[in-house]
Every structure is written in structure tokens, then in C-alpha cells.
Image (tube, rainbow, N blue to C red; front, side, top):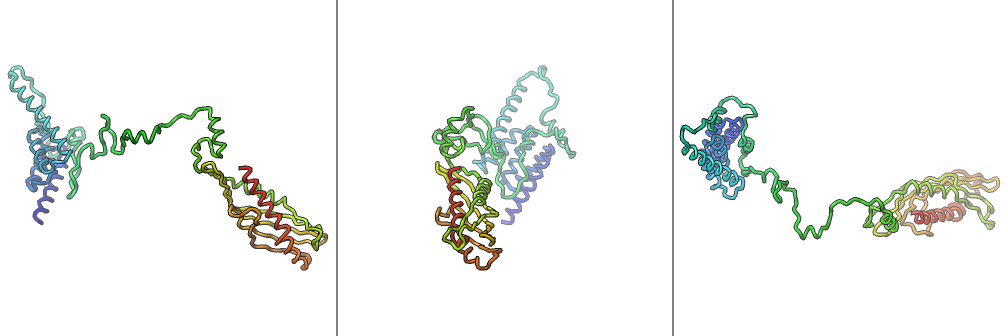
Length: 359
């Protein structure tokens, strides 16, 4: 087993040397290195491939065919090898025909060629590195450096191309079947008509934009409107204590209102969704004759889960100032628990109805 591994590694080494020489257009030296690769390991496919490449570049098409035939025997299903073998067989056939034609031509009628393929290869086969213009077509298609255990690969299909309807395209191109195309329908982009009044009217009836003909989820942010409109209504809220109370005619006002949170309106499948999560902080003042008091209250959960008419939970009820300590029970009853607090709840309920009417 160690001996087989050594043979394979030796073959890989010489195969890579052949590749380097080929890149430098030193085809004679590339041929020698490839020959040493197949001698080291006769079942190493890339060694035969390198040998076929070098022989072809030197004009030895018959030898190139023989080397590639050895490779295809080892990997008969390799399409890249089969393609290269077919190409070299055509070159060998053409070269044989030209040689026969030359042999049949009288010597007096022959025209000396300025340089044969073999001479070109020999001229470039030197220890110096040739310029990039001396590279041949076979050099451009040479494979990359061998790595032990990798699969043989070299062809258009390996580079990510295929032929569809006579045109080269990438492997990511998906050609739909007739059934699939019929199922998907026409998906080509279409130009919108200038007159979209009818579409806009139909869409407006469903509460969605003109582009959203399917009526899928569409949400509009109305946070700024919600904060402003609710604050204005709260600041306008007042409450007067009834005649039956200990302080008839006493007035409770909202001196400051702060609204935080967010609100939006959504439409899906023709149905509206009103989404709001708000926190209301109110400063209030109480006045009855010469008696004054003020404080604050927080309603932290003004949202869509609250049922209209059921009121809203409060937190942080405070009386900051009261001229007469005996007023505190009165404030607890008519400001904190009932009276003014109920008026605030009604104001918020009216705002929710206004929200739904507006959007």
C-alpha cells in the first residue's frame, strides 16, 4: 500500500511539472515530464492527459490520441476525456490527409512552409520563459495543478456552462417544462396604464393601495396622528362635581397630557386591523373656591385589548398638593375612582371610535 502511494505521489509530481512546462510553452519538456508520470503510475489518468496535451502541442496527433485512449480506458464515463479524444482524433485525421495530399503532389509544385508545427514547438522549447503571446490554445485549456484524491475535470460543463436551444448559458438557467410554464402563467413585467382610476377605486374600497390588488397585509403607521389627536382630546376634558357632592361645582381640569407608544392601521383580505399600544400620563388640577389641589395619574395600558366601556387600568396616582388635608377623601372619590376618572375613560373611548372612523 505504501508503494502504491509513493507511485501515485511521484506521478502527481511529474504531472504538475508537465503542467508548469506547458504553461511556459516548453512542450518537449512537458512531454518528458508527462511520460515520467505515466511510467511512475500507469493508472493515473491525469498523467495520460498531460501526455496527450504535450503530444498535441508538438503536432504528434497520433501519439496524443494514443495517450488519451489510455486515459479513457481508465475512465470510460469521463465526458471531458471523450471530448478531448474526439478533438485529437479529428486533428490526427486532418494531419494524415494533408500528409497524403503532400505526398501525392509533385516535388516541383510544392511550396515550402515557413515553419511547421514541430519547428514552432521546438523553437519555443527552451529553458527561458516565453512571452504571454507564445501561449497556444492547448495551453489556455490546460488543467489546474493536480491534488491527490481530486476528480478529473476539464470542460465547459465543469466551468458552469451548458447548451440550451443552441445557446450557451449557465447551469443556473432553468428551462421550464410546458406544464410548469402553464401552471405559473405569464410572469413577464407589464406596463401600468396611465388611467388607474378604476383600480384605485376598487383598491380604496378594500382599504389597500392601488398596487395591492390581492389585498394582502398592508400596514400604515399613524403614531404621530394618534399621539396628537388623543392629547388634544384629553386636554379638553373637564369634570364638574355634582350638587350632591361635598364640593358642588368644583372643577377638575387636565393641565398636561403626555402620550407615548405607537399606533398603526392594517388591512388584510378586506378587513381592517387597528393596532395601538399607548401610555397616557396626565397632570390634573382641582379647584373649589379657595381650595386648590393638583396631582397626576398614569394609564399605562391603552391598547386594542381593552374593551370600550370597561375602563383602563391606572398606576402611580399621586396628590402632589392639597390646601386642606380633609380634601383627600374627596379627591380619592371624585378624581381618582369616579367622576373625573370616568370622564377620562370616556374621552379615550371616543378617541378609539374616532380612530376607526378616520382610517
